[in-house]
Structure formats: C-alpha cells, structure tokens
Amino acid sequence: MDLAKLVDILKCGRVFIQMHNYPDPDAIASAFGLQKLLEKFGIKPVICYDGAAEKLTAITMLSNFSISIVHCHDITDMTENDKIVAIDAQKHNSNLTDLVGDEVACIDHHPTKFECEYQYKDVRIVGACSSIIAEYYFANGIEPDKNVASALVYGIKMDTADFSRGVKQFDVDMYAKLFKYADNDLLDRMKLNTMEFADLKAYGSAIENIKVYDNVGFAFIPFECPDALICDDIRLYSGAGYY
Ligand SMILES: [Mn+2]
Image (cartoon, rainbow, N blue to C red):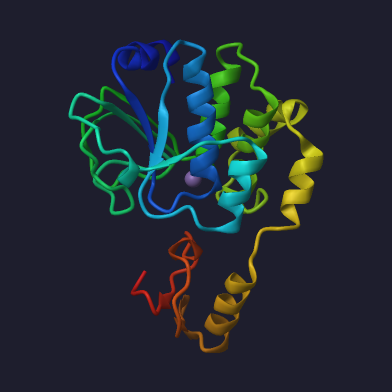
C-alpha cells in the first residue's frame, strides 16, 4: 500500500474507478471510499461498472450513503488515455469488462488468475476489499467521513457474511477502527432489509430441486433472476444461463 504512489499515477488526466460487473456492496463501498480519498488529493474519479447494480443491498447503499455510480454505456467519451483503477476485481477476469481506458491500477482481495502489468497493484487475500481501502485512510492519518465509514463497514460485513466467511484479523482490525465513524443505527436497519421477494422466490425454487453430489450442489431456477443473485458461494443454473 503506497497512497503517494497511487496519487502520483492518477493525478493527471481523467480517472475511472471500475467495479466488477454486477457490483456488490463490497465493490461499491471500496470504490466510494477510494473516490472520496482521492478527492482529498485533487483527483475527481468517476465510479463506473458494467452489468447492473440490481440487488437491493446495492441499491439501498447508493441512496443511504449518497454514492454516484455511472454505467459504462453512459460513458461515451472514454479514451485510451483515461486511467482506470480496477477495484474488487482484476483485469482479464470474466467479471470485469475490458473498457477503452488504461487499467493502470488494481486494488483487490481475490487471488490473481491472470498475471498482468499494472503501474500500481495492491492485492491482498483478506475478507473484503473494503478493509484494504479502510487501511488507506488509517495508515495515512485520514479520518473517513460518516458515509464512507458506514459504507466500508457495510462492505466488510456483507462480503464476510458478518465475519463468518474468509475473514482475517485485518478485517476485524479495520472494522474496529471504522466503528466510531460509522452510522451504526443505520447499518442495523439496513441489516434487516437485504432481500427482495423476487430473491426469496429464486432461492425457494433453487432449494426445491437442488441435487447434491459429494460437496457440490446443482439447482435450477426455471425463470429469470438477477445475475447478482449468483454470489461467491452459490452457483446456480438459472433461466439466464450457467454460472
Ligand atoms: Mn469483495
């Protein structure tokens, strides 16, 4: 982690922070936290994505924390000189559309599948990318505002399934530091409201016909459902295709 180097790379020209397609709360929180951090150094990044931010958890974040994201189809003037920071995702992965701009930086918490050159790379196997972004604040003596801290806490909690999945001491340490800055009452309320009726119908349908072979389960959803429903630990065959 070298914030000064990252700022130096991004300080000239237009900057986009690209989340993975069908961004989830951790991707949105990480992008937002990085955007607000870079703004302190005079950089004004645009957060972009492909696919759709369609899950209720993602949509409520945008309004609750005043986050603006732009679909890549609405960015018609991106050029090869524009700089892209890939966040919560890595170049050449199938969940990251290759846009016209130059992927100069990558901040992620997933294993690297395809090695590629970035001017700046910070990939650490921890529970949430939001934890990595939180450290950019605290290690540099910068206090996150309430929206940023709340979003990062939400990202950590959602990506680690409330500290029960892939969580590392680092995630817990960052959560502890974020706590006093976050709107914890709002986060409690958001916790009660993470699923839509359509999600429940899809899960219900999948559970009805799941077939388990050793430790792998296959399920079929006979109707269209949001792609974002297919998360890290659930691979479903839906009407929309294989995942
Ligand atoms: Mn993540």
